[in-house]
Image (cartoon, rainbow, N blue to C red; front, side, top):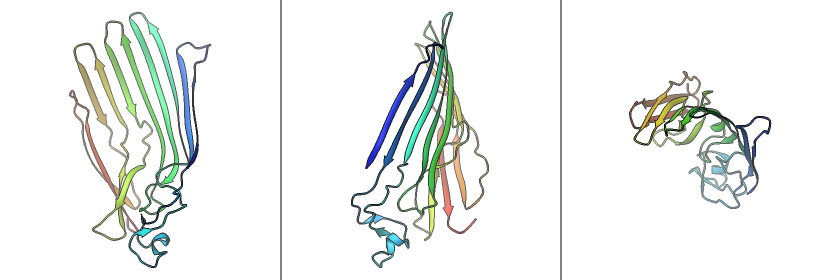
Length: 219
């Protein structure tokens, strides 16, 4: 594997309290030697030895799940006021498109373009309050997957968490948290999304469960 990584922080002198962050990594990840690797049953890699058993040789092939480029850009602005400080923070996460796993079809991929943001205050008396939001732009991608064992030619995959927002209030005596997950838009095509979400405005974060099923050649 070969790669190049960078990380930078910029504080413009003309605007006190403003900070920009930029980081990224280029990676060329290949298997030096990987005989007996799990592959898609019936694929050219699987049939190279004349046997359709879901096992092949991926030596010299790209490593699935590792993007060629991944990076992030962030901005934060902090402003002092009488009795404390307030801040706003936002960041953008990017990953280039990559095949999800070696034993899934080539068209089951992942690419990430996610925006997160938060706003908060820190008071001199020790009180802290924070409002946050994750995946503001409702970016949709798969995080993992596997061949479905009970039905040949079908695959299962797990989607990422949809837009979620919450709050946090802390002091020297107690911490209160609240979260809520917004429902994802209806998705058509060759897969359906199933998920269960439980949101609890208590001292614990919400419980989040999702799953997706992808069926080859069927809607």
